[in-house]
Image: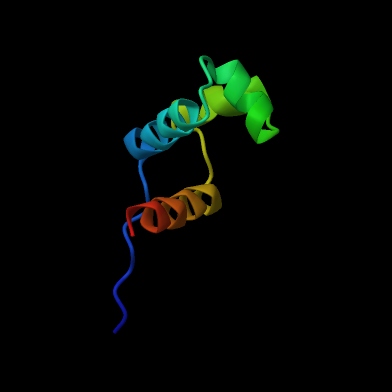
Length: 68
């Protein structure tokens, strides 16, 4: 049987957003949203855990890629 990868949680998503802001010298979530091509509301929802499972899976894969 194949093991499943634990899906990323809200704290880890917040960390990824903060890392992206720091890496690109962005001082606000508004600027991060523009940089990512999403709305300010999208960043707001992601920080509060309002994100669907497929997006969490993608974030998990990104986190795994960054860690390796």
